[in-house]
Each structure stands twice: as structure tokens, then as C-alpha cells.
Length: 377
Image (cartoon, rainbow, N blue to C red; front, side, top):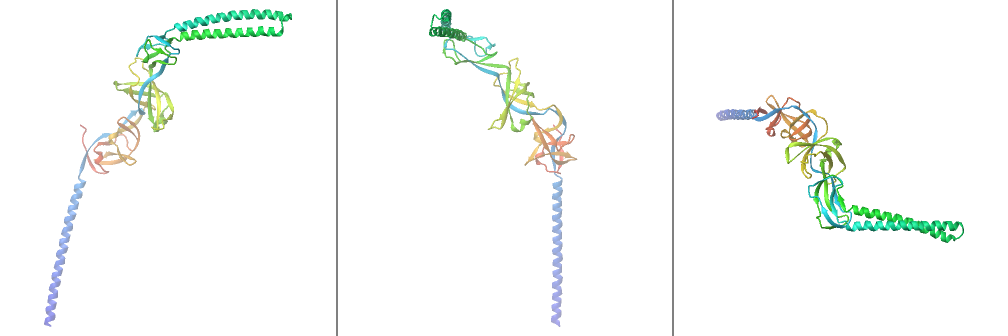
């Protein structure tokens, strides 16, 4: 019995000690959980309290005239190579690079001695042909009278008729020969086929030149042609008679105007670009062929639309989005874009006029974060 009591006492003591250990363990666990919860809560509070500084501008509608941008160059409206039509020594050349000429004016002259002699020879041949024709006609008339009287044979009559025909043909050839000789003589004077300016002179006085050899290049610089190309996606809005404005480096603060007058019938197979031309007045002559130009082709009349800075737009795959301000909270908006106009993009859907658009600091934002709008300065 004493042993049983002692065993019971020991068992009770061990049980009480075990229970105390469990209680202490539970208290320690709960304290740790509370500390962890408090720490997490503080972290969450710290995260929620982070505020991002941004800059924003009000979204506004603007009167915008839609256009597409292109680059190109100015070219002569017309360009022609003036060539000699006859052989000979170049006697005179009366123009130089840059000289203004009018249509039909003499620009060069070939020595014409041989060609004058050719005219004289052709004129003499014509006189001889006329005499031969008169003689053949006299013989034929006489033979015709005798043939009616049956004084000559049919063969003699036919021979006289043939000689008359030959004499007539000789006269025609002699007239053509004289006309050709006179024409060749006239070609010794080289004239301008159009009004313009001399772009390049290719010969000098004293040179022997052959028929077909280029003498100079003439260009028409009033008006000029503005030649440019546009991407395949923009070809649908192009049509003739559209207004075109452009700037050039020599006159950076001036804007020149023209009219679209030619759209090429096919795209360039390598670049997939469509070529077009605009006519540009150049009465003052200050614009020169070869100048590089930055052009805008207006595709319709002005309209009210929303445009935003390109730098405010964020791209995520095929989506385009921006951030706007809603009561110190950043809200993401997915937008649908229209055309590009310089440093701005047209917005067709997604935002409205009057909303505050975040233009600086949007790259670090997520939807719903707190923000502080810093004044522009």
C-alpha cells in the first residue's frame, strides 16, 4: 500500500509538471503569434502608406486636322537632256550652269558651212529635176500626138510616158532633198525645248560633237515636285488634290505648301512603301531641287479630338494604357489610339476630356496605389 501511495504521488507530480509545461508552451506560442501578427500588420501598414509622386495634366479636346507624316525631296518639275541632232564642230555655246533660258532660245550653234553647201547642192539638184521634167513632159506630148496619128509605135509612146513619170519622181526627190538639207542646216542652231535653267553643261566651244550627243541638261524649277513615300497602312487615305505642307532645313521656321497631284499605281516591292508627288509653286526660286523635306499630308478637315503626349503611354503586349488620377489614387485605363501627330497621339477610346492624366512617374505605378500630384514647375 505504501508503494501504491508513493507511485500515485509521483504520478500526480509528473502530471502537474507536464500540464505546467504545456501551459507555458501555449503562452509562448500565442506571444510569438501576436508578435508576428503585429509585425505583419506594421509591414502592411507601411506598404499601404507608401505614396508615389507624379505629375499630371488635364485631358483636353483640341481642334486637330488629321495628317500623315512623310519625308521626301524636292525635284525639278521637268528635266530634259538637250542633244545635238547633227554632227559638227561646236562653234558657240551661249549659256552656262544656272543660266535661265526660254523655250526656243538659242543655247549653242554648230559650224554650218557644210550644211549651207548641202542646201546649195540640193537647190541645184531641184533645178535640174525641174528642167528634166519640162523636157520629159514636152517629149511625151509630142509622142502622144504622133501616137494618135499612128506615126509612132505603142512602145515609143510608152517609153515617153515612163520617162515623164520618172522625171516627176526625180522632182519630188529633189524637193525632199532640199527640205532635208534646209532642216539639217536649221539643226546647227541648238535651241531650248522648254523654259527653265541650265543644270549642267556638258561640252565647250570647239568640241566635235555627233548627232545624239548630249550638250546640256535643262530643268524646270517653277513649279517643283515634292516626291515622298508613305507606309502601306496609310495608302487608303491618300487621294489627289490633298493639301501638303512641308519644311526644309534651309528655312526651318517657314512652312511651304503644295498639292498632291500624283499617286503611283503600285507599291515598292522591297520597302512596301507607296510613292506620291505634290506640285509646289516656286516663283521666288528660293527652293532648290535636291533639298530634303519633312512633309505633312492633310487627309481631312479639322475636327475636335483628344490628344495626349506620347511619353504618357505605356505598352504591354498589344495593349496600350495610361494612368489617371482619381482622388489621390492611380487608376489604369486601357486606351485605343488613333494617328500620331508629332509628339502627341490621338486617343479614340478610354479617357475623357477633363480627367487628370499622369505624364511623369507612371512607369512605377500599379492600379490603386496612392499618389501625390506634384505641381508642374
